[in-house]
Length: 72
Image (tube, rainbow, N blue to C red):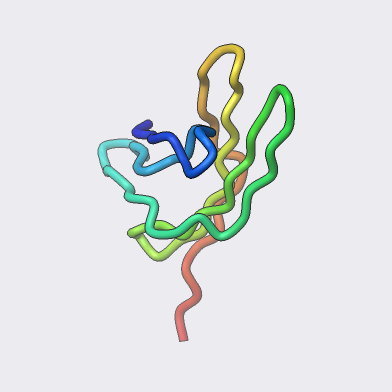
């Protein structure tokens, strides 16, 4: 996982690996910040939407949701 400090110093995702593919975070659509976890709903370079969870104590990232891109 690649991350950077956001506007208020909180960590934000920038890119992550999914298997052998590097997926870039294009936009953070929403975020939920709590004491133990931070959740980020992101639009990604593969056209999909993900929710990523960051655990501050262990500095661990997990993908909690994947939504495939909509195809007409």
